[in-house]
Image (tube, rainbow, N blue to C red; front, side):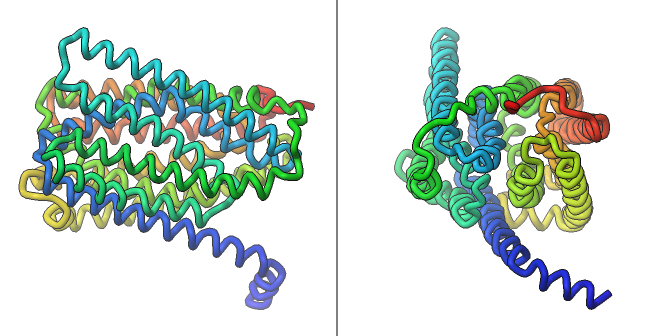
Length: 446
């Protein structure tokens, strides 16, 4: 047995070293991002009262709206077809098509911005204009960052992705605090710091992407007629459709708390999410960031049965790791929730610490479901994930309003768990049905 292991490592030495190097970069970026996000909570809760933190959380729902409906949807299509374009030696056409899609998405984002600002003025809600405009700017810039990061991750530029991922939260802290000291304590100042952070990171990502463009595309100076834009759109449009429902589910809890309770409770729930839901999802994101380019490369155009089987096996292995990670994190949250809140927040927020284990479990369950869902993406069966996403989002939104009405923050936490469990059950069913079934939607040319 030992000899077989030694032989395997010797035979695959180059591949193992490459994967180890890549996973080290990803782990470094995710750890830096996790520490930064926790530090951001600690710093901002020291400057903002719960009601101001609640206003910031509501502003971030605007960011989610733009990202889900516009730029966020096409990011998945752009990321998925990088490896296919490499195989077909047409990165020139791929990049041109990606640029056009981003342009169309920007027009959509600006249209949403115009409708929102006009609505606030018409409703005489001028006090929300500052946070709304800052949120809209941040949403567009962060959307651009997501596109560039997706391309660089697909190209397996792990160091570049890790650098920017780790830097983001720390830049947010520095710039948000600077603007808080300059402009005074307000959610608008924090959002302006977020937008400025995205602008700096965008400039840096453009620099590194330009290096990739020069290196990879110089040999293919002419588009070869592969219709990349159409292929990306066919892959991406389901994300934009269910993005509507996803945004409703994600924002419903915060707006339900505003309707039935107060912005103070929105702030407390937001902190609870950032200390419980976000860290476990970052852990899951480490697994998916590492695996997605590999899955896409293994899957290719998803026509080869052997390549399809490889994708299925890999996703199940990652999901098992996710289960272990979720169990450990939930136990730790159960044992140390009070200590965690005392360290990262002020006394204004500690009353909700008892809900932390449930939030961690909800985040882990959702992450496991997302891992399983990547199997459908790699096998070009993205449309089959739509019912799971839409139905679970509707159930989550309904649960948010019903549970929050009766139980306030406790109800919001229960609704979060309901949504995660529903998504896991439904996506598991979709994955099971898709296995060994030829994809019904043609996304590649013969």
